[in-house]
Structure formats: C-alpha cells, structure tokens
Image (cartoon, rainbow, N blue to C red; front, side, top):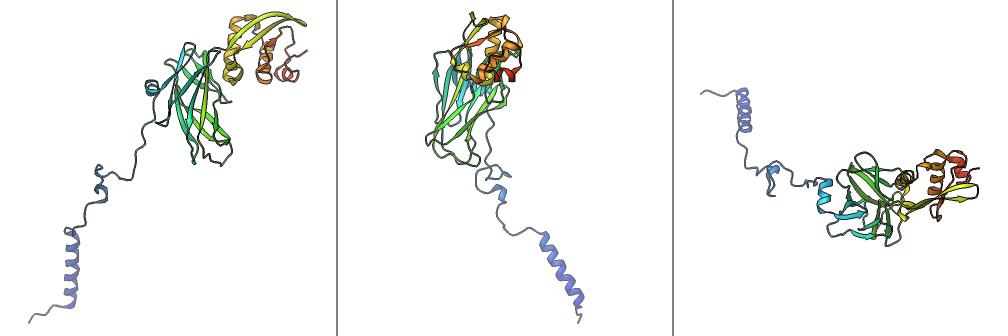
Length: 283
C-alpha cells in the first residue's frame, strides 16, 4: 500500500485553502456603497450635498426690491419663511429689515443683497458699503447693518462680500463665545441722496459753507462720507481743499447731528488731527 507522507499531506491542505480563497465568496450581501437608500452606486448615503450659493442674478430674480432714488438693490431672506420688509424714509433712503431666528451656533446667515446691474459693492472698514458704478463713482451706499434681539442680547450684524455684486448679511453675538437664543431683526439702511442743501453765507470771520446732509448721510459711516463730500464738491467746487475736507470730516465724525456743518475756507489747513482737537474750527 502506498502511504502519503506527512509533508505531502500538509502541502495538499495548503493548496486546498488557497483554492478556496480564490474562488467565489459566500453570499456576503451587497456592498455598502449600494445599500438600499435609492442613491447612486458608490455614493455615501450619509453625505448631504450643499446647494451652490446664489448669484447676484438669482437674488435679483427672486429678491425684494430695495430702491432709493433711481437705484435698486435686491434683498433675499435666507430663511424661506422669512420676508424682507421695506420702509421708505423721508430723505429718499430706504430701510429693509429681515427677521433673525435664534441660533446657538453663530454666525447666522440671514440675507443676501445683490447690486444693480453695472454696479459693485465696495466695503469700508467701519462696516458700511459704497455702491459704485462702472467708473468707480459713488452712486449709493449702505450704512453699517444693525441687529436687535428680543431678549436684548448684544448682536453684531455684518456685510461680507461674496462677489463684487453680491453681499451676505450675517449676525453674531456681540461677545466672543456667546450665543443668542431669541429671535430678532437685522436692519439694512440704503441711501443715494446725501445732501439736503449746501449754501454759502457770512459768519464770524468770513464766508462759510453751510452743509446740511440727509439723515442717511449723517449716519451712513464712511460710505456716506465718501458720497457726501463728492456731492459737496460737485455742487460747490470752491470747497475742494484739504482744509475744508478736514472740517467736513470733523463734523461727520464728531458732530453728525449738528444742524449744519459749517465749513470756512479762510480757516488754516491745520491737518485732520489738529482740526479735530479744535472741534472743527482751527485758528
């Protein structure tokens, strides 16, 4: 009788195991990438795709018109159930408000704003925004956005540029690390008319230009200063001097609510800091 040696028996067992491993596996069920979720094979059913951000054209087509003078922006609330409320102001500006829902993970995106075709947004360091035409000229502006909460929590609203003609409006707690838990509103104030009047007269010491900005121009920050000074110079070219501009900026920063901002060409060009120290009246 032929007897199998132990070494040959071991080799046979190894070969059998290798053949079994190379053969078809037992029914292991469908692969994880195609399990019953109705998704395409190979796509993780846990992943939720984020929709593409809107374009300015999207917002113009679906947003609420916000018109001052002959210029119209479009505002669209981020929350589908929210609406944009538009309130025209006596000076020709317009205030738009958007509801803010409570959020525990700020910042909250509450709205998007689209510029009129052919114009772009130019954000300023104080939170205001200039709207410029294709030549870079001021045609309107947004005062810094403001936010209030029903529980009186300190909130900070901000414009952020998503594209040259598209802004997002976000709200965050005013204190680092805080949250806000009650709804509120964001106010966006848009204006194009900056001057009530600018007239020459005689005051102590000599000629004086009495500038009366609109309420929006008085509160519109750097954006309003840009447009208001340009309007003063366009109407009264004689005012276009460094000293007069320093007096103008001094009033805009230090005395915005004064009945008129009186600018005197005969005052010395003392520089912006000295003009501020002299309460806008350097001597």
